[in-house]
Amino acid sequence: MYKSADLSGKTDRVKLAAEAARRGLDFLVRTQVKDEGSADHGRFTFIYDCEQDRTLTLTTNWTTAVGIEAMLMGYRFFGSESYLDAARRAVAYIYSLQEFSPMRPRVSGAFHEETPQSRTFHPRDALTAAWALWDWAELMEDAEARERAIRYADWFVASSLDGGYPRWTVGFDGFDVAPRWYGSFHSGSAAFMARLYTVLGTDAYREMMQTILRLYNDLLLDDAGRVHVIADIRSRSILADSEVSQTIAPVGWIRMHEYNDDFGALANMMAWQITGDVQYMRAAERFLSHMLSMQREDGGYGPHGVDGFSVPPAGGSVLLELLAARALGSSLPVDTAIEATVDYILGLQVMRPDGVADGAFRGYTDSYTLDPAIANIRTGGYAIMALLRYAGATGPIYFPSYEATDKNSQQVDRLLGTSLNR
Image 1: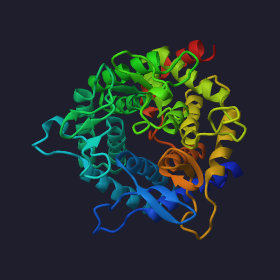
Image 2 (image 1 turned 135 degrees about the vertical axis):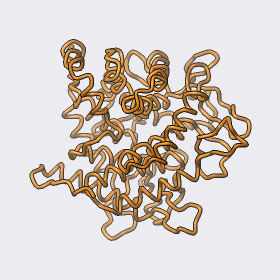
Image 3 (image 1 turned 180 degrees about the vertical axis):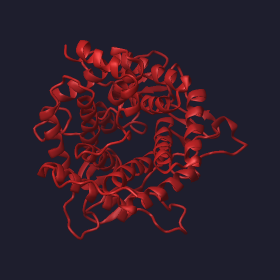
Image 4 (image 1 turned 90 degrees about the vertical axis):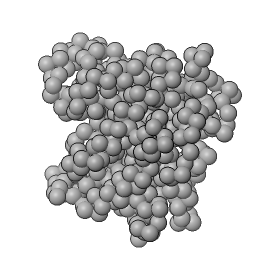
């Protein structure tokens, strides 16, 4: 049993952030499916209508995993058994999504996208599910969860690549599914590979981490730090909004990934820790420098101009990465931006004492538009983890690994003097 974090000596802002995280966690617990007679048992609310007080959609494999990660951080920080119980229910749901049928050996270890009946899955989404199982396994010393996470990681290494980069979508019946595109979101896949390599020392995970980041840093992250979300595999050319089918990737979804990099900067920082190669930290700083230039008056991140807006999930993801960069000694001027981002995230939270929606974080609709009545676990899960980290949460969940830092401490010290303070 973890003891609740001692906030007695902390500043009012830290206490406010911790309390917001707690209320966000309580919302997710409150709206989680707890009926053991339901096949949805363990799923969280993905999209919630705060005006009508009803769940519009339940979580997929990856959004269930985001909820688990938030619960694990919440349990470690607050010591509340209700968060551990919620994570346990969600882990069981993810178990139900994993494919081990001898009739489908080519996808053995993969996770169905939404329900056990889903006929396709996105390898990046399934990787997030495996990532959550790994973090659950480490906290709870759960051998089954650990093995399940490794089964997927090994599938990912052996079968996910198409044109030197992980696939967008895979089918359980036909395997290859359109589109044959590179997606920037796979940059974060390298972070899970780094996490496994740090603990297990398996060369294949390190090699996959480097394979992913090589293409991402060279093709999808430009010299100014802008993320190009989609490129065609055959031509290796960046696709404009007008070239992308709206049924596959709405413009709102594309715009979102330009600012929420799906933890590509985190992956680059972790790769730098592991390899000592300064190119990775430079890539992380390119993206974060661009985000600092794109921070808006409300503290969020998004396009400027008449039609500008802040991208809700970028608040949490960028905050986590700024905190990681500061922890690693980056010379980027992040302190003011961190405080402004915290204010932005706090402003996204629904304040409705004694109401079901209390603690939810506003985010995108199902069609990737903005509506102040809509809450979304992508925004909420990232926000909770970022606020807890800001409040002093420790551990390796969505943060550079302490094992890697210790292992490379002398090299890190040397590089800090040569590359980060330039």
